[in-house]
Image 1: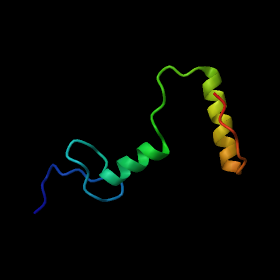
Image 2 (image 1 turned 30 degrees about the vertical axis):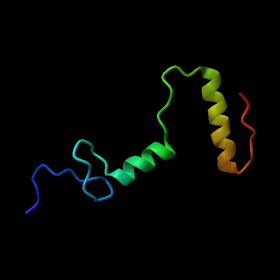
Image 3 (image 1 turned 120 degrees about the horizontal axis):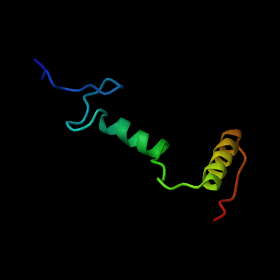
Image 4 (image 1 turned 90 degrees about the vertical axis):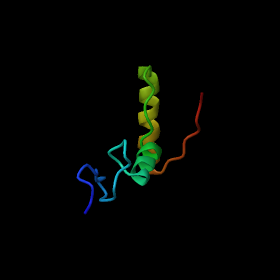
Length: 65
């Protein structure tokens, strides 16, 4: 039978031994929601929110740094 300690990912696949997600779900989580910077200013948060909102609407925006 299967191992009693086997962890199942939210997609139904067996998870990695030291993780709660399978390799595919971990990849998608890192690609589509990358970890935020610890020290992020209010301006950086606002610019990122505007960029995401415009991206959802389909407006192209030039990245200014």
